[in-house]
Image (cartoon, rainbow, N blue to C red; front, top):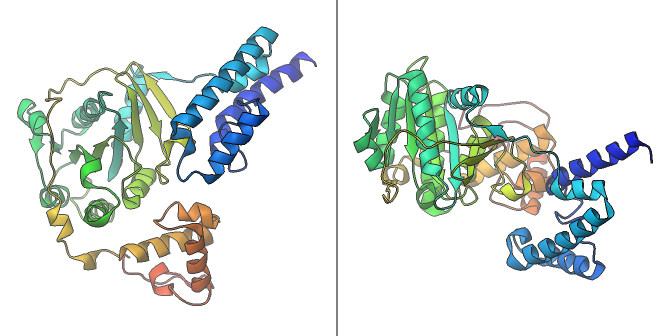
Length: 373
């Protein structure tokens, strides 16, 4: 094999490792498990397990043990392509202290109706990171910053306390200056189930209305949500983050991964668009042990006539995803609370003349006004 061919093989191996999580045609452990019997076992477990098999203990143990053996053999044999496959592409981590990175972080949250989500485990510094972004935003705009973190409001002059949905709605719609809201412990208040989903959808709708002009002209409106995971969040909020924001996933106090597309809520199958290292703590003070609260009753009691019914939203989202974006039924289903068969049924119904008013478009391509226009 020539040197050029060898380098191409090595590069291809690393690239394959990076793209494997996004391939429907192969499992994430492809190439890592060399033993036929063990590979057959986890192939079977992957096919029958409900949910993400890669998060289970048995899967992790098998893959780690097999990958260790494979890497040891590769090192002993000098097999560079196999070593590159195991580690993926060369790291492109960025230093959070670089001027260009700091400028990107600041400018990212200045988009109109920005919706950022900060996730991470206990002690990863997610609240600290969110408040640091709020500090950046305040320096750039000199606007109002509010939060449901009472200690942050008490310890920092630029921050005010708002602990309920009605207050946030007023904050967004009636303030005559730029505003940013930081909502802590989102997992507990804005999940994708029951009344929590209604509250989450109402909050997302408030931000959408801001984008349509229901706020002071030439002002910025934004929100930063903090939670341990985005998986359980309502799909409406996940869509909003994907459409006009970022997911910041704190893997440690000093490292953050940044994602763009989080509609599915599954980060295990995604590659971060950026990874920042050397993240420093915020200058804002707050009590790390505070148990925050947020009253969503105002959202639950809101006039449901302002929002499409949740099922109708999913019908519209799924049909437009298939028709306009060319998604498969399975891909479109990831945008809704239903499965691929449900999407296929609704799409065929639409082709036969149903749901036209909800979708806002007939099968012949004619567009019409819908309830949310």
